[in-house]
Image (tube, rainbow, N blue to C red; front, side):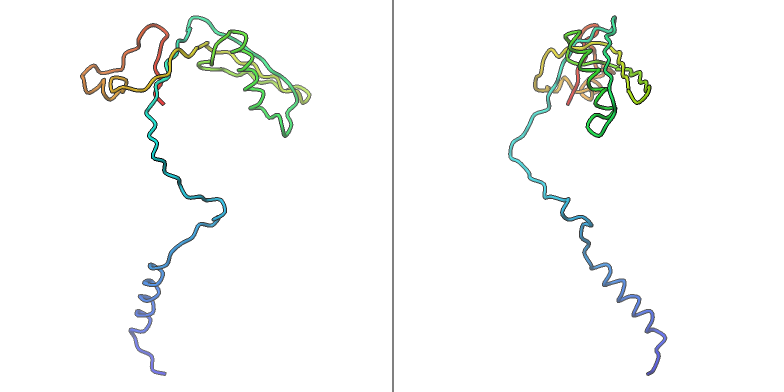
Length: 151
């Protein structure tokens, strides 16, 4: 067998060429799915709410942490109790105090109460980009304690 000096270079080039042309598959094909594209166009929504930043509300929950009731469960229960007692929809800036004594977790939450006031379609004036284009520099608040959320 005659050995040519260019033989290793040709082999390396062919190997690289074949590797570049190969396709790759997902490692977990059972966990992937094709995206379904819908013809329905959903407009951007604005959720307006009013917040009372002058008072705080509190709620508490406690129990044993298990497979079915983890720490997040008790956080959610404390928020739900605080919202139900104050008759509000959600809490702004919730602060949690968590203690664990003898396997019993106790969660307390405190924050500012807020209520949803309106859900509507977004208009160009709601965009912060629109506010900067108009030269105003920042998006205005409508009144004290009332904000806009863009989803």
